[in-house]
Image 1 (cartoon, one colour):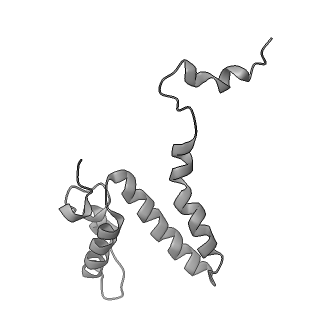
Image 2 (image 1 turned 90 degrees about the vertical axis):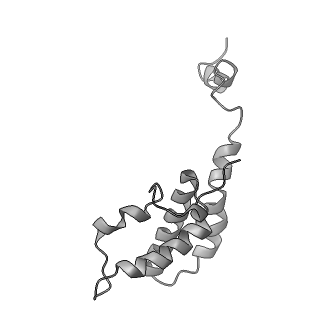
Image 3 (image 1 turned 180 degrees about the vertical axis):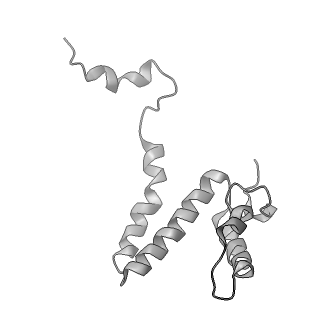
Length: 113
C-alpha cells in the first residue's frame, strides 16, 4: 500500500497546471541568492534597508513587464522633481511612478514578442 504522501508527489500527473519540477521557483530566487554574498558587507542598518528598497523595486518591476535599468533611470530622473524644500516627497504624488502606472515611458516597458 502506498503512503498517503505519495499522492501529493504525483499530483503533476493528474493536473497539467502543476509543474513537474521547481525550476521556475529556483530561477525566481536566483538573484536573491547571488546578491546575499554582497549583502554580508553592509556596514549599517540604513545601508541594508536601502538595499532592500532597491531590491524590492527591481523585483516588483519584473512581473510588471518593466526593464529595471530604464525604470530606475526614470525614477531617479523624476523623484528629484517631486521633492519639497526639506527633501520630503508627498506619497500622493507617486502614483504615476508606480510599476503598474500607465504613464510610464515606453522605454521602461519590455518590448512585446
